[in-house]
Image (cartoon, rainbow, N blue to C red):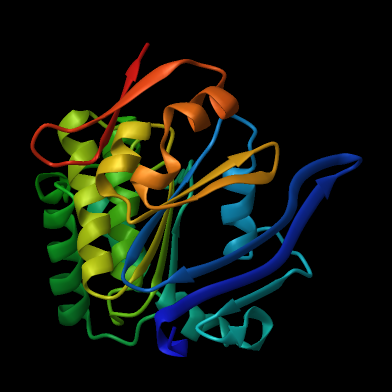
Length: 259
Protein backbone atom coordinates (compact mmCIF):
# COMPACT_ATOMS: atom_id res chain seq x y z
CA UNK A 1 0.00 0.00 0.00
CA UNK A 2 1.43 3.39 -0.92
CA UNK A 3 1.49 6.03 1.79
CA UNK A 4 -0.64 8.33 -0.36
CA UNK A 5 -3.48 5.80 -0.41
CA UNK A 6 -3.51 5.43 3.38
CA UNK A 7 -5.88 8.07 4.73
CA UNK A 8 -6.11 7.02 8.40
CA UNK A 9 -4.03 4.69 10.49
CA UNK A 10 -5.21 4.03 14.04
CA UNK A 11 -3.34 1.73 16.39
CA UNK A 12 -4.44 0.22 19.69
CA UNK A 13 -7.54 2.40 19.95
CA UNK A 14 -9.17 1.96 23.34
CA UNK A 15 -11.64 4.08 25.27
CA UNK A 16 -13.28 3.78 28.68
CA UNK A 17 -15.90 5.70 30.58
CA UNK A 18 -15.20 4.91 34.21
CA UNK A 19 -14.90 1.14 34.40
CA UNK A 20 -16.93 0.54 31.22
CA UNK A 21 -14.92 -0.40 28.15
CA UNK A 22 -16.37 1.35 25.09
CA UNK A 23 -13.60 0.38 22.63
CA UNK A 24 -11.03 -2.32 23.21
CA UNK A 25 -7.73 -2.32 21.29
CA UNK A 26 -8.96 -1.51 17.77
CA UNK A 27 -6.43 -1.33 14.91
CA UNK A 28 -7.51 0.13 11.58
CA UNK A 29 -6.09 1.33 8.30
CA UNK A 30 -8.58 3.23 6.14
CA UNK A 31 -7.77 3.92 2.51
CA UNK A 32 -8.57 6.54 -0.05
CA UNK A 33 -10.94 5.40 -2.75
CA UNK A 34 -13.08 3.25 -0.44
CA UNK A 35 -16.38 3.50 1.40
CA UNK A 36 -15.95 1.83 4.79
CA UNK A 37 -19.10 1.24 6.82
CA UNK A 38 -19.19 0.71 10.59
CA UNK A 39 -21.98 -1.64 11.66
CA UNK A 40 -23.07 -3.00 15.00
CA UNK A 41 -25.94 -2.92 17.50
CA UNK A 42 -26.73 0.06 19.69
CA UNK A 43 -23.88 0.75 22.08
CA UNK A 44 -21.33 -1.22 20.05
CA UNK A 45 -18.91 1.71 19.92
CA UNK A 46 -19.43 2.88 16.31
CA UNK A 47 -20.00 6.58 16.97
CA UNK A 48 -17.33 6.63 19.68
CA UNK A 49 -14.81 5.20 17.23
CA UNK A 50 -15.76 7.83 14.67
CA UNK A 51 -15.40 10.60 17.28
CA UNK A 52 -11.95 9.31 18.24
CA UNK A 53 -10.86 9.05 14.63
CA UNK A 54 -11.82 12.69 13.94
CA UNK A 55 -10.50 13.90 17.34
CA UNK A 56 -13.91 15.07 18.55
CA UNK A 57 -13.08 13.04 21.66
CA UNK A 58 -9.64 14.07 22.87
CA UNK A 59 -7.42 11.06 23.36
CA UNK A 60 -3.79 9.98 23.33
CA UNK A 61 -4.40 7.19 20.85
CA UNK A 62 -2.04 6.79 17.90
CA UNK A 63 -4.03 8.23 14.99
CA UNK A 64 -2.46 9.52 11.77
CA UNK A 65 -3.98 11.26 8.77
CA UNK A 66 -2.16 10.72 5.48
CA UNK A 67 0.88 9.50 7.40
CA UNK A 68 1.10 12.50 9.75
CA UNK A 69 0.18 12.38 13.44
CA UNK A 70 -3.05 14.25 14.15
CA UNK A 71 -1.35 16.72 16.53
CA UNK A 72 1.14 17.69 13.80
CA UNK A 73 -1.55 19.06 11.50
CA UNK A 74 -2.37 22.73 11.22
CA UNK A 75 -6.02 22.88 12.24
CA UNK A 76 -7.11 24.99 9.28
CA UNK A 77 -5.30 22.77 6.79
CA UNK A 78 -6.76 19.61 8.35
CA UNK A 79 -10.25 21.12 8.15
CA UNK A 80 -9.89 21.20 4.36
CA UNK A 81 -9.04 17.49 4.29
CA UNK A 82 -11.28 16.09 7.04
CA UNK A 83 -15.05 16.63 7.07
CA UNK A 84 -17.44 15.20 9.65
CA UNK A 85 -21.22 14.92 9.58
CA UNK A 86 -22.32 14.14 13.18
CA UNK A 87 -25.50 12.32 14.13
CA UNK A 88 -27.06 15.53 15.35
CA UNK A 89 -26.19 19.06 14.25
CA UNK A 90 -27.66 21.85 16.35
CA UNK A 91 -27.98 25.38 15.01
CA UNK A 92 -30.20 27.91 16.76
CA UNK A 93 -29.52 30.96 14.58
CA UNK A 94 -32.17 31.90 12.02
CA UNK A 95 -29.88 31.45 9.03
CA UNK A 96 -31.29 30.48 5.70
CA UNK A 97 -30.15 27.26 4.05
CA UNK A 98 -27.68 28.95 1.74
CA UNK A 99 -25.97 30.65 4.69
CA UNK A 100 -25.66 27.38 6.62
CA UNK A 101 -24.05 25.63 3.66
CA UNK A 102 -21.68 28.56 3.19
CA UNK A 103 -20.37 27.95 6.73
CA UNK A 104 -18.50 25.05 5.16
CA UNK A 105 -16.36 27.61 3.36
CA UNK A 106 -14.85 29.08 6.56
CA UNK A 107 -11.52 27.19 6.22
CA UNK A 108 -11.27 27.96 2.50
CA UNK A 109 -9.52 30.91 0.90
CA UNK A 110 -12.12 31.50 -1.80
CA UNK A 111 -13.71 34.53 -3.38
CA UNK A 112 -17.40 35.06 -2.68
CA UNK A 113 -18.20 34.09 -6.27
CA UNK A 114 -16.19 30.86 -6.08
CA UNK A 115 -17.82 29.93 -2.78
CA UNK A 116 -21.30 30.59 -4.18
CA UNK A 117 -20.57 28.32 -7.14
CA UNK A 118 -19.36 25.50 -4.89
CA UNK A 119 -22.22 25.75 -2.41
CA UNK A 120 -24.76 25.89 -5.23
CA UNK A 121 -23.32 22.70 -6.69
CA UNK A 122 -23.32 20.91 -3.34
CA UNK A 123 -26.92 21.94 -2.67
CA UNK A 124 -27.93 20.52 -6.04
CA UNK A 125 -26.08 17.27 -5.29
CA UNK A 126 -27.86 16.85 -1.97
CA UNK A 127 -31.25 17.83 -3.38
CA UNK A 128 -31.73 21.04 -1.40
CA UNK A 129 -31.24 23.66 -4.12
CA UNK A 130 -34.91 24.60 -3.96
CA UNK A 131 -34.56 25.29 -0.21
CA UNK A 132 -31.76 27.87 -0.56
CA UNK A 133 -33.77 30.80 0.83
CA UNK A 134 -35.73 28.82 3.41
CA UNK A 135 -35.10 29.48 7.09
CA UNK A 136 -33.03 26.61 8.47
CA UNK A 137 -35.08 26.19 11.70
CA UNK A 138 -38.25 25.68 9.61
CA UNK A 139 -36.89 22.56 7.89
CA UNK A 140 -37.74 18.94 8.60
CA UNK A 141 -35.15 16.68 10.22
CA UNK A 142 -34.27 15.06 6.92
CA UNK A 143 -33.90 18.40 5.16
CA UNK A 144 -31.59 19.64 7.93
CA UNK A 145 -29.51 16.49 7.58
CA UNK A 146 -29.01 17.15 3.87
CA UNK A 147 -28.17 20.81 4.53
CA UNK A 148 -25.33 19.78 6.82
CA UNK A 149 -24.15 17.19 4.32
CA UNK A 150 -23.89 19.97 1.72
CA UNK A 151 -21.99 22.06 4.28
CA UNK A 152 -19.47 19.27 4.89
CA UNK A 153 -19.03 18.64 1.17
CA UNK A 154 -18.33 22.35 0.69
CA UNK A 155 -15.72 22.27 3.45
CA UNK A 156 -13.68 19.48 1.81
CA UNK A 157 -14.29 20.49 -1.79
CA UNK A 158 -10.71 21.60 -2.51
CA UNK A 159 -9.04 18.17 -2.33
CA UNK A 160 -9.67 14.85 -4.07
CA UNK A 161 -7.79 12.84 -1.44
CA UNK A 162 -9.64 13.64 1.76
CA UNK A 163 -11.50 12.00 4.63
CA UNK A 164 -15.27 12.25 4.98
CA UNK A 165 -16.93 10.79 8.09
CA UNK A 166 -20.70 10.39 8.12
CA UNK A 167 -22.39 9.32 11.35
CA UNK A 168 -25.80 7.81 10.51
CA UNK A 169 -26.30 10.14 7.52
CA UNK A 170 -29.50 8.39 6.42
CA UNK A 171 -31.27 8.20 9.78
CA UNK A 172 -33.85 10.92 9.01
CA UNK A 173 -34.10 10.39 5.26
CA UNK A 174 -36.73 8.81 3.06
CA UNK A 175 -35.86 5.99 0.66
CA UNK A 176 -34.84 8.14 -2.29
CA UNK A 177 -32.63 10.45 -0.26
CA UNK A 178 -31.04 7.53 1.59
CA UNK A 179 -29.81 6.11 -1.69
CA UNK A 180 -28.82 9.51 -3.05
CA UNK A 181 -26.70 10.21 0.04
CA UNK A 182 -24.88 6.90 -0.24
CA UNK A 183 -24.43 7.34 -3.98
CA UNK A 184 -22.70 10.62 -3.13
CA UNK A 185 -20.49 8.69 -0.70
CA UNK A 186 -19.56 6.30 -3.51
CA UNK A 187 -18.92 9.22 -5.84
CA UNK A 188 -16.56 10.81 -3.30
CA UNK A 189 -14.67 7.53 -2.95
CA UNK A 190 -14.38 7.11 -6.71
CA UNK A 191 -12.78 10.58 -6.84
CA UNK A 192 -10.18 9.62 -4.21
CA UNK A 193 -11.76 10.23 -0.80
CA UNK A 194 -11.73 7.87 2.15
CA UNK A 195 -15.36 7.74 3.29
CA UNK A 196 -16.29 6.27 6.68
CA UNK A 197 -20.01 5.80 7.34
CA UNK A 198 -21.91 4.64 10.42
CA UNK A 199 -25.10 2.81 9.45
CA UNK A 200 -27.70 0.56 11.01
CA UNK A 201 -29.23 -0.69 7.77
CA UNK A 202 -27.36 -3.85 6.76
CA UNK A 203 -28.73 -3.81 3.22
CA UNK A 204 -27.64 -0.23 2.56
CA UNK A 205 -24.20 -1.12 3.92
CA UNK A 206 -24.04 -4.18 1.67
CA UNK A 207 -25.01 -2.22 -1.42
CA UNK A 208 -22.73 0.81 -1.08
CA UNK A 209 -19.68 -0.31 0.90
CA UNK A 210 -16.30 -1.50 -0.27
CA UNK A 211 -15.51 -2.61 3.26
CA UNK A 212 -17.65 -3.40 6.29
CA UNK A 213 -16.40 -3.32 9.87
CA UNK A 214 -18.66 -4.84 12.53
CA UNK A 215 -18.33 -3.89 16.19
CA UNK A 216 -19.88 -5.46 19.27
CA UNK A 217 -19.19 -4.33 22.83
CA UNK A 218 -16.24 -2.31 21.61
CA UNK A 219 -14.53 -5.23 19.90
CA UNK A 220 -13.98 -5.94 16.22
CA UNK A 221 -16.21 -8.83 15.11
CA UNK A 222 -15.84 -8.73 11.32
CA UNK A 223 -13.83 -6.76 8.77
CA UNK A 224 -13.99 -7.33 5.05
CA UNK A 225 -15.93 -6.92 1.83
CA UNK A 226 -19.73 -7.06 2.22
CA UNK A 227 -19.90 -10.75 1.24
CA UNK A 228 -17.23 -11.56 3.82
CA UNK A 229 -18.59 -9.49 6.71
CA UNK A 230 -22.38 -9.63 6.29
CA UNK A 231 -23.28 -13.25 6.89
CA UNK A 232 -26.12 -15.01 8.66
CA UNK A 233 -23.66 -16.29 11.26
CA UNK A 234 -22.32 -12.83 12.02
CA UNK A 235 -25.79 -11.32 12.27
CA UNK A 236 -27.01 -13.99 14.67
CA UNK A 237 -23.86 -13.75 16.81
CA UNK A 238 -23.79 -9.95 16.93
CA UNK A 239 -27.47 -8.96 16.70
CA UNK A 240 -29.06 -12.10 18.15
CA UNK A 241 -31.43 -12.48 15.21
CA UNK A 242 -31.75 -15.26 12.64
CA UNK A 243 -31.55 -14.11 9.04
CA UNK A 244 -31.18 -15.38 5.50
CA UNK A 245 -28.53 -13.72 3.32
CA UNK A 246 -28.93 -14.07 -0.44
CA UNK A 247 -27.56 -12.36 -3.53
CA UNK A 248 -29.45 -9.43 -4.99
CA UNK A 249 -30.96 -10.72 -8.26
CA UNK A 250 -29.32 -8.11 -10.50
CA UNK A 251 -26.66 -6.21 -8.50
CA UNK A 252 -25.09 -9.20 -6.70
CA UNK A 253 -24.63 -7.68 -3.26
CA UNK A 254 -25.78 -9.58 -0.15
CA UNK A 255 -29.39 -8.93 0.86
CA UNK A 256 -30.51 -9.68 4.40
CA UNK A 257 -33.97 -11.17 5.05
CA UNK A 258 -35.47 -11.93 8.44
CA UNK A 259 -35.75 -15.69 8.90
